[in-house]
Image 1 (cartoon, rainbow, N blue to C red):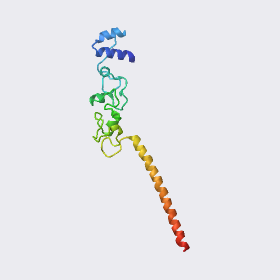
Image 2: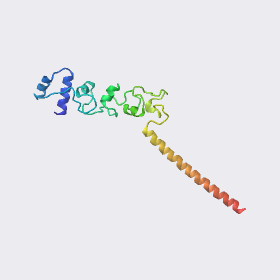
Image 3: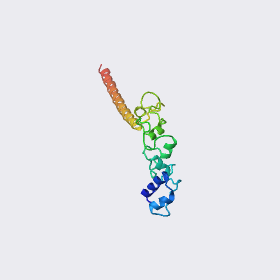
Image 4: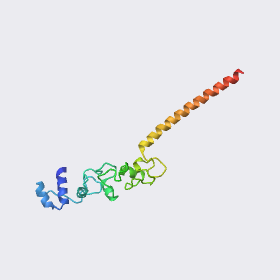
Length: 165
C-alpha cells in the first residue's frame, strides 16, 4: 500500500472511521489498517503516530536522536528536538545524563545548552567545546616547547660566558 493512502487511512481510523468505510474510500475492498502496525519500528503504532502527529515512517520525527516511542514514554515532545528549550537536544541531554524537562539540570543558574558541565559531573558535556579545548592544549604545548628551547639557549650562553673567563 502506498504511503499517502496509509496516512489517510490512519488519520480516518484515528477519528473513528471504521475499516470497511476506509476500504470504500480507498477504492480497495481488501484494504485494512491494523492498529498494531509499526512501520518505522519506534514502538508506536502507525495509528498512535497519527494521534501524536509524528511520522509513522520515521522513527525519530524531530531528529533529536530519541525515537518517538521513547519520547512518549519519557514525556518529552516527539515533535520538538529540544523539549525544554535550553539549547541541548533531548538526545544530547539523554547522552550526557541531563534532564530534558529542566533547562538547568544541575541547578547552577546556567541553561544546559550554555553550560560546559550541564550535568554537574565535573566534565565538559559538549563535544564541540571539547575539540576547542584540545586545540588550546596543543597551543599550550607548543608554547612550552618554545620555552624549553629558550631555556636551552640561555644555558648555552651561560656556558660560553663561563668558558671565556
